[in-house]
Each structure stands twice: as structure tokens, then as C-alpha cells.
Length: 140
Image (cartoon, rainbow, N blue to C red; front, side, top):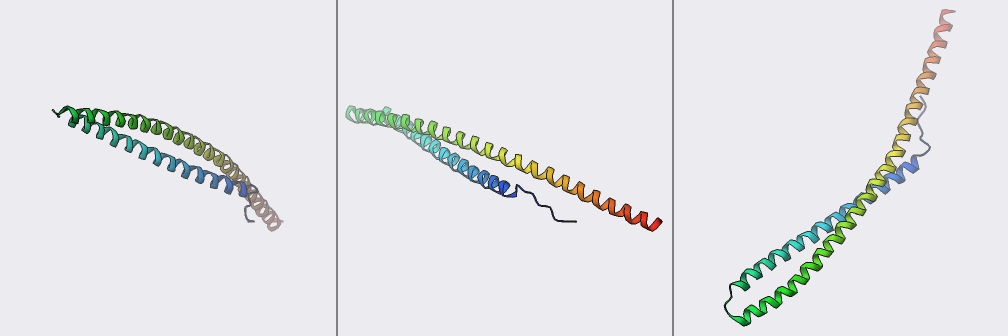
């Protein structure tokens, strides 16, 4: 049997590389989104701690300073919330690109599988023909 050669093998390799790269980019974006969500959770927990501390204070100046700090902290929480939304959007886009790259690789893989099946069928046909010829010569 002769060796199987897929004429789009280089295209398949390129598609596999593209898929791996886009999968890596998606993983990076997802990791960054996770980090941004964790920062937001820490800020919100800190805000709750400051509120609890401020409400427990009897001194007016300390309470006033706490409220000013809470306003600044609230701005940071809003900014971080926006960063989380932006990063999650970037992660979603990266995932879509990865899924598209995976689909493109699968298309070429299916072509390769079909070409290999046709190759095997042709080789088996040739082998059967050779066996039939050998049998007809022996019988004659």
C-alpha cells in the first residue's frame, strides 16, 4: 500500500495553530476577567467593612471622614464594575474567535478524513483486483 498524502495538510496545520492561539487568548482574557471580578469583590467587601466601622463611630469628625472615604471608595467600585464588564466582553469575543477557529479546523479535518477514507477504499479495491487477477491465473 502506498502512503496517504493529504494535499491540504499544511492548511490543516495552520488551522490547528490558529485554533491553539485563539484558545490561549481566550484563556488569558478569561483569567483577566476573573482577576477583575476578584478585585471588585475585595473592594465591595472593604466598602462594607468601612460602612460598619463608620456607623459605629460616635465622633462627628471621624464619621465625616469615613463618609468622604466611602464616596471615594464608591467611585472606585463603579470604575471596577466597568472594568469587569469590559473584560468580560473581551473574554466573550475571544471565546467566539476560538470557537470560529475550532470550526474552521474541523472543516479541514473532515476533508482529511474523507480523503483518507477514499484512499483506503481505492487501495482495497486495487488489492482486491490484484487478488482476483492472481486467482484467475491460477485457475486457468
